[in-house]
Length: 128
Image (tube, rainbow, N blue to C red; front, side, top):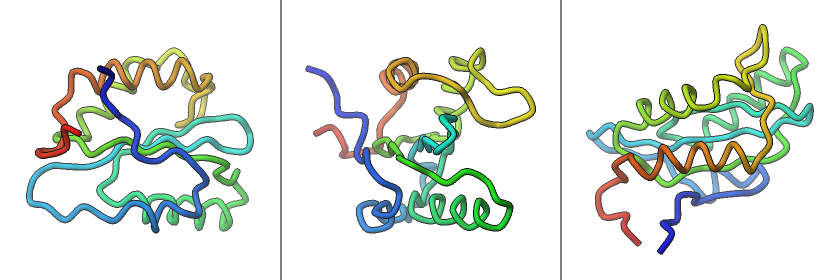
């Protein structure tokens, strides 16, 4: 049985409605992929997906950067920053020069992320 790794896959404007911030003393957070209008993908790790989306949107408006077209948010993971670092290692060959973004197709990206997710520890009590 395939585990459900993604809890949100949709437009950015609903992230704060669908995904409340995590308030825990444990190192628990989400992995987020922002698919921008220019075709690039940006990777984030956050305890508060709505705030992360809002922060990018504000920065994009201020500095005339590309807006978010679509987002994917993972289930919460323990040691989420380590999960992000492992995904970054797996997709390093797709990194844009002089930028923090990646040029990678969605299928390859999700496969690489899900390989890491399969080895990571999900948040306690999220085994549905």
